[in-house]
Length: 451
Image (cartoon, rainbow, N blue to C red; front, side, top):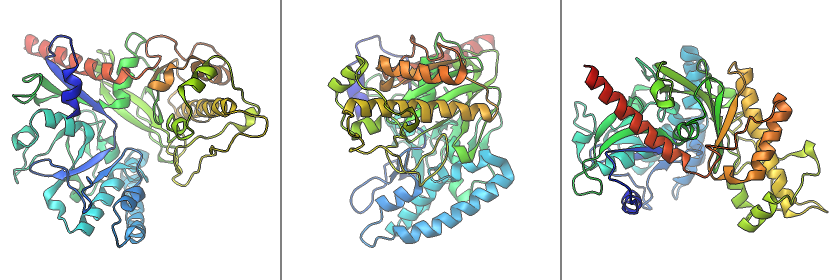
């Protein structure tokens, strides 16, 4: 597996603890006893990616009979009813799992696919990416690795932030909301705090015997890695510039707004260096816009170097594009039918491809990142005091300058976008996952010593 290949190239001291982060809301259907992925008639694993809508899942596995349209109509009505009932019980927070890309919506679509395949959902479970890797290195065919229930099957343990879009409420006394249907709950992992010890690497594997601890989402791990040394107080924020843009900010309370794609995660205080606080809240959202569109438009390294050197300019500031990689937007507004306005032939007369690149990057900075933070302020989260950057998109100096200018125009102050520590490059999530594991280990050891 990929873990073995990566680990074999590591030349440092043997680790005592391993901890994995992964993109949240990417789900896989597996056998409840072995955790082997379930496949369709074409040999494809039944999965839902982080940015898939439930309609995407139905379309992907529609088969020869093309039942996607019928299933879409039936499921849309059922999901909308569940969303309205959930709002009555738990407000905006409870509606998150039932958005077009919400976790429960995806699980319902995957179960409909199984029905079409003639498979019983009683024999399956739904797991996250991080669970597949964690339980893989522990020897995932062993049911004792998970939390067995009365039927003797495996229920993986996953950090509650990876389960938030499936209706799990983190924090003390947390669990799946009462609005989540029981037949869905029994398919899902057990929620545990970030950093919890779940096992050891299987004998015979590289790093055998090392402790395996629960990580978190990639954006949370990136947040922890990027803010190390920057501070973790209210207003500390991180923007992830990867395939899509995601942002998070420390707030005083949880913030949710289904209509604008805003949700909140809960972290133990020790994870972000706030040891005096039991829990810390990270509010934010994830857009469909991001660096993926740069690949779609086939920009190359030479063009990025020319752009960083000062070439390329925006001719009309009132025409910044919304560069969505696919139809539908999640944040800073939630509109499954929204279509972006950057196409391959969007170079007007007298403009160059570098001008197009400048427009796209301005569009992401102004129409997504800054607008996203404005939404958090409108919902009571306040303004960011500092914004660190993760992901490959943060490496471009000129783009950081564009983003800094966008924040200056909004907030009237310079220096909000940080140049140092967490300026991007893609290693922040790995560093954050390591810090989560290390800090959890220190906390547990201190607890044992005190006892």
